[in-house]
Length: 522
View (cartoon, rainbow, N blue to C red):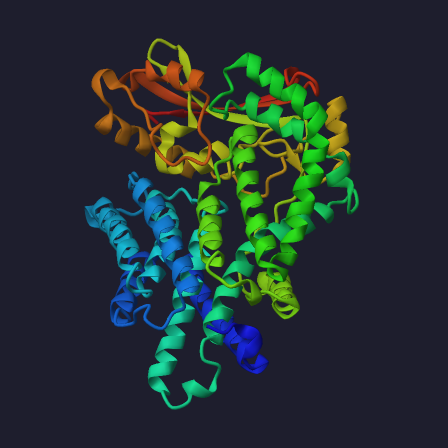
């Protein structure tokens, strides 16, 4: 099947603009959900109805590589949605006692939609929308907003974009059958495929620009940012599955002292090279394979689990492997680079760039038992909400803090340097989220009641078997496994603001300590 270079450039540009415009129309739906949260249920029903109405469209006319990508992201969405069971306490809105039933039905439909999307592209729309919807619905039902979508953005955007674009093409063919043969044959499909890939590549390229745009200068992150710092922070935060193996952690720290700088340069260059993915098929396959290797490295060294991005990248690799080599030339390279550059205009593109400091506001919850003893609660115990709680994306209570994030991140090269001396001019945390203690407290109390209803023998509770973004160290899980949740009388949010030693990662100085107590009887 001939690829885009043989088609009219005007047709390709028109399809690109039209598909981006249709995708922008979808963003209006998400905006309505944010502006009018009460539309949570009607929006889900409307999307399901639209998928059902468009179920007559099949993959018959869709080129195999594009169909492979669509089915691949559909399977990825299905696996993620099925594993992420939405067990949520109803605090703010309970839909007259039907909230959990509605969540269960939406969850089952997500699994069914993933299966249906293997044959009908319309259901891919539900797959992507559900992942956004369930996070929004969680905030609406619990009253505790779910802020963190970074790990699932590609699995929201790509399915929605691909489904809407292909459906628009197919419906246009049916509406104007006489016109279709004159507008490029298969070229519109290839355009959709390449734009979808460009949207994912843009996450990496624009992240390299974010690193180069930090206040220290274009090469400051690559040449001066110490990646060993975030590894030490991950150990201190107890978010590495292997972090209790002291012999190995010390060896990795020593290795990063030597390899950390070349690793940073490599990451920067690989992400920057994303702009070139359409110049050559082999280059595209190699770069996306390197992106996945990078995600594996991030999980091992930092504990951040981007398996969702990993699956999307594998789907892209599978699709592109079916393209002929001559599908890529200077024209596709230039057009693809332009699409990557312009992606922030029509898509939600990640721009991940910060310095890794040695100063961290480490946060966790303790449970306080009836006898006054306390035990650290692993973030995994919060199940569906483990990501925002491990990341503390809902802000910090009033107090003095180090001017960095909970992972030690900062956008200031000066603060990065100051963290080595543990001397700062500011005592404000690097978070723009307004603290809402009432919603946090209400959520914790309601979640605890839910735990008591589901706890096992002896009041034990665990949520380890869940697709967490951050798992907790085995030592934390093991200690918490012995806690009888029936004896818990309070939760304490503990924030220790500390500076770490650059060589060992040990606490060099504890600067501040803040606590926020939530009495269950309150």
